[in-house]
Image (cartoon, rainbow, N blue to C red):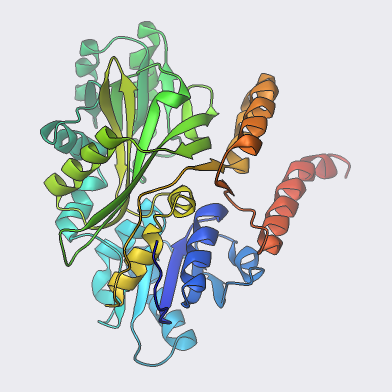
Length: 399
């Protein structure tokens, strides 16, 4: 990215207790001259305060959108006084929806990184996402939506293996989960019914059983003031689960058909801002998996490849000139937390982790999810927290 002259501004990042995405977004904005603040729903502020690029960090807990937005606005007005505009960028579906639902709590000074309300609501529901994907020419695997018991009869149109997941971030019911793969037709109805009883609303979908390298993505920024869109494409090389999950190792690589699918989808949806498309390459075609209508968690891979979508959004929200982007370069990302999750669930994955680590060490444009050589303290703090959580049960057992 051609950065040109840097102009300071202010940005508030709304983060969950997930470190890498927020740390890299904060670093991008700070290196561009911005004043950075991170609001976490959890206990993450102490991690961000250790960063040399963090100006402010606070934990804010709330149960409702209006309460959360009021507290964020009050804190920002106290710590970022004056009349200068403030960009507000959500890093999770929950924070995106809360901004959409209670956006009127923010005066004009706050520039919210959200799409138009109707667009956001459509994209936060996976059933409506899938319908849109079909219309834009990148069809998902066959699916049915199960919101009530009478919908169970629709399961007969699917055959195992089948993926079961919530229709949205807040639709998992009383027992949180992201993905269940059911390999036995006889177990499908009972699995889905038990989740319904727990209050879930579900997408039940044909499971495409391909290796991690078949999962490809597009990290997207689309302007709200011009036809311009910047897209960085790539593929996963390993995931946090044997049959799915978040990226553990991935690479930025030019995939023109994936970029074209992303452009068609955002054009058809009316989406603007920061997002990310995920597809799976199977049988010679691309199948839609999902679109995240907010900053993609692995955006730091695009940044390392030269397409810093965070800076583009930050500058546009503040009304600043937007720099040009050169074609993406090669880059490779390592996500340590995803590997920890993989090893906890599958001890036999050590050999995969070792091979992947060696591959990462040989790759160009390396970037880690949390660790940064010029900003080491947050990484050390995260490692300490992970170690403390790992040994805490054994400590408790000795009392």
